[in-house]
Length: 467
Ligand SMILES: CC(C)[C@H](C(=O)O)[C@@H](O)C(=O)O
Ligand code: SF4
Image (cartoon, rainbow, N blue to C red; front, side, top):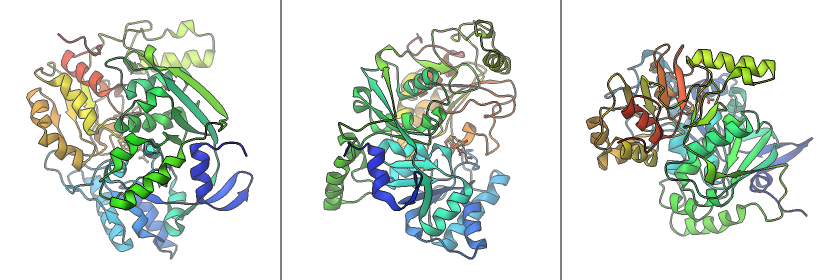
């Protein structure tokens, strides 16, 4: 028998029944709920006269529609208040554990799952949210699902799924100073295109991944859905085990060591065959930022925005021209030096403690440029408390950044916090779609260090360019 990939091994271990044609009924180990997708799925279970099958495998937290205003509660943003109340009522009725506002554990769902040890190697993890792929960084098979799937999973703890093709992206070499997992992710999407992963589960491998801290792997896997793949993963290794040891919901003591022995077996076999293989030399990557309205519109900081006239395909030419127009940029202009109005440091892509430290390193002893509004929104209550304990809040506030409460905030503007029309934002989030941060808002995706540099410089600028 040919060797198996990491994905194959987890898939095989969860098949309850082979349904033919590549379809199978899978056992689901963890189901995460947030304030937008959780309440309707829970309501539908009840409406059908069903019950949550395994409430102890389901975990909930409010994140999307919650105000990030200091001192907020669930009602501060009124439309979110209805969702907050529904999530509280329905999780309580179903016996599902809720990590509520102000409690350790609350946060962006894809930040709190790994942080609490809810997500573990080898598990199947679902959530009604496309960035569930983030969790694959721990060696889990994690993917976003739709609302009827969420209802199905709540009622049965199973899901009917079609096995995706397997793709491996080998990342070899060393990242240059100032180049992060975010730059790598944007570089990969820019190079392969936003549809490269459609129909595939992606495994990131190679020396650059082995050298990468777990939080950086979470960032990389987070952007997998922007490659079109539902699932991105990294084989669990010693870094993973060290990250997970002692997490409150991970196995403890001897049980943890026994689990590690099993987790070590999950890595793809040396003779495993992937349907597609890509190779990236990470040593050539420069700090990377998007110029347009798709994550694939990624360029190096010292590049120029493209000229649509140089593109032969008419449809592609129009897409680029529209993106330039929306973004208020001129064909061929250097991206560096473009003035910015807003900076958002947050989102499930980049709001963990290592992200905040990277931004703080830039902000230390400097000040946000006049006319720039800069926010730091920690990814979770635990990240917020850890950052405050090490003085990052004071550091950011002294530098003129606003320090906010944890949640999705301006990543998707579902809590009413928006970048104003035609204003330009550098954001550490993962989507720069038209209107993503508010109607007419212009979003440039970048790393935390790049975002902090933009806040200080008042324009898009290279990391390390500050005096
Ligand atoms: C609102 C939610 C369902 C959505 C998602 O699925 O990803 C959001 O988190 C996003 O990032 O666009
Ligand atoms: S932070 Fe942004 S990308 Fe992540 S779950 Fe929230 S809205 Fe989606």
